[in-house]
Image 1: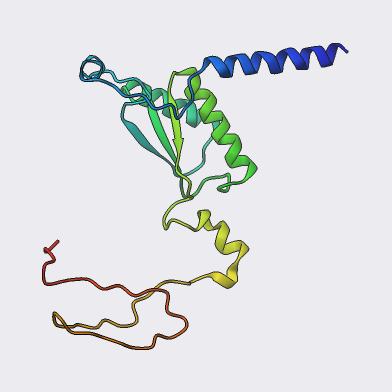
Image 2: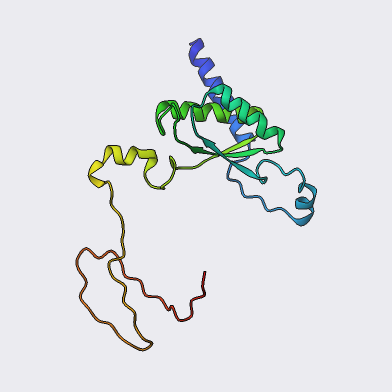
Length: 178
């Protein structure tokens, strides 16, 4: 009975704290006076976000050290990107434990954290997880198989192979050099 009461009070207390905290994605429109007042020291919700590459072994000590240095430079928001050489594999329980540690330590410092939803470049491979779980789909890519130049007013009609993914037409005569 006592454990049930403690659990119920914990849940109620957690819900009350959550209700008192603004949502992380709450949209706030600032006027020019507000922006001017906070320009030199913006709140963590609107300030600069530093790209925090987790390259190499991460630990609580490394996380604390890095967050302290960022805070000392006036950075109050960081974006975690999984890197190479981490001791905890991307999306593993160890990875999520490090993220939980980083979030807790950031909260203690009044900082915010964003997370890049990818384990390094190229995007879409989930830090190698996709290739290791589906080796049959490795080395797939979309490639240009044919380019056809045409004159204004010219019409092209043709049957396309079944494996055609898409066709793009563009006016290059008005294209600006990049």
